[in-house]
Amino acid sequence: MSAKICNNLGLAIQNISICEALALGGKTGVNQKILAQIMSLSTGSCWSVKTNCPVPGFDPSLPADNDYEHGFESRLMKKDISLVLKEASKANIDLQFAKKAIEYYQALEDSGFAKKDIGIMLQHISKLKERDE
Image (cartoon, rainbow, N blue to C red):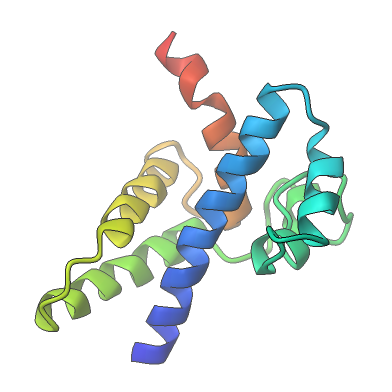
């Protein structure tokens, strides 16, 4: 179980960072689909952009093109991060990114996206500032 939750912690943080980068690109006039293609071939390349890209239109077989259905549910990611934080406490290690990541996934749950694929994070991040204004 420890290897699984450590792997999912990496994915949780990776997903947030990819979604933040894509959201920023979109808000500054960069086509998100093109940005995702660039990232998938350069230093931003990772599972969250190559295999489960959160940008609709990147690959019609992915959850992003299917209303973020049939993927890794956000609520399950939050559960795994919760397990990570429990293990970190036992191991006496302070995981600041994990603490922040659980806030992001909790916000998805609070917004009604608990059963949506973790790629829904892109839509959530893209709209955060708009909600504050």
